[in-house]
Length: 151
Image 1 (cartoon, helix red, strand yellow):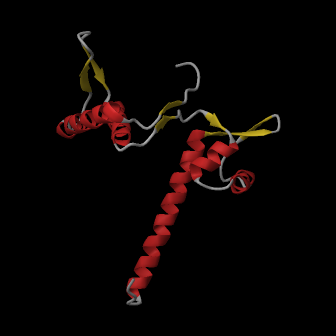
Image 2 (cartoon, helix red, strand yellow; image 1 turned 60 degrees about the vertical axis):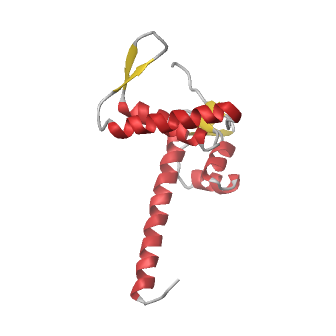
Image 3 (cartoon, helix red, strand yellow; image 1 turned 90 degrees about the horizontal axis):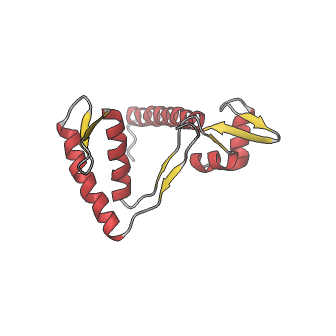
């Protein structure tokens, strides 16, 4: 696709939710039984097509969320988002996000007076922040165990 895309599938209801649940269960079992390599998909009499395993895993993960009643959004890593969209994604305030940008913790560019942030950079920051928080929690747990504290 030549242009950035943002595709949103809202939460499903009724028969669509049931279809997504059945499809997820079936395709998750296909995924579990096929340990590596492409997956062959058939489309209503038009033959089969090989789909890379990673793409199939992505599709099954999206179905899992839809079957659980969640909305799913597809955002390419290179798509630029606004500061408010980035703040919402990180579950922080917009002023806090602006501070992260100005401190150089997340790269951005300016378009006129507006900041634009690549979604991939926001995701990278969140993964790094999650990793750091998990390391701190592990260290605190180890310290508590060393001190014989119970929680």
